[in-house]
Length: 347
Image 1 (cartoon, one colour):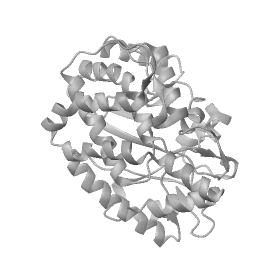
Image 2 (cartoon, helix red, strand yellow):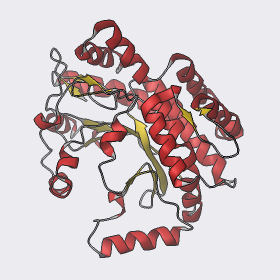
Image 3 (cartoon, one colour):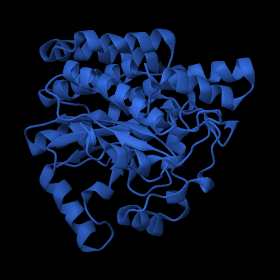
Image 4 (tube, helix red, strand yellow):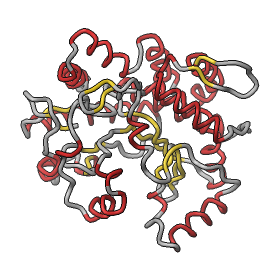
């Protein structure tokens, strides 16, 4: 989020930052997004989570400097606590004009921010298998990353209201189950041929195959404020993908995946969920702990055990939503919440 240094409101500045970065060392690491009040920074392809962590820290430092040069501040969260989408300027790109033209109010309202993690997978059918498996873990990722309890200056009662906003998009939420990559490709081809979508990137599922990159893309997480949390979640995602690359999965019914995700968005780390093989409500914290035990061998094989310990820290200290709610309880002011986000974003 690009913030006014004093007002802390969203302000336009992405075009200026993109122009300033055009010939710089980070030119291929910055990209436009829907509105002129936000920018996307992304790493390159990293062989390990440790490499991604080092690049992400460098990117965040540079992003803070680049924003300051344009007399802006940065903030990272799933929503801006008080800014209004009606006041945001859409970027002058054909793809964004086309998106707004198609989605109308749902597109204009999409003032939300996410953390996306790509994991390279060397076989298309294996990628589909992993995507199917990760549906059962989407609720865990939502609860751990939840960082959007405020919308338009008011508390929403949700740990992550970003999910409620994005649910207005078509082809969003937990992905359907596909039996093979061939079935997935046939469905996408039918949608393209019918004129329903331009290409497969117009499927906005919480986790999806990304054939052009040869990855699975996990898109369900709120943008987190602290870099260390982003690194911990990256390790969690990569270890999950590694585990299911070589392991069978029990089917997670779409109704259960949807319900568990909603409960995680509503209650965050206080949520209880439904899990296969266990009767009664299961605390989502217990589900995360069981997942950590399950993926420990994969984390060891990948060399990301240290980064994965950050998930335990989130469980101990709380997610970003808890911090925002605590600040609001102490001040009664969403501007103070935004100030705290901006103060924590550079680290």
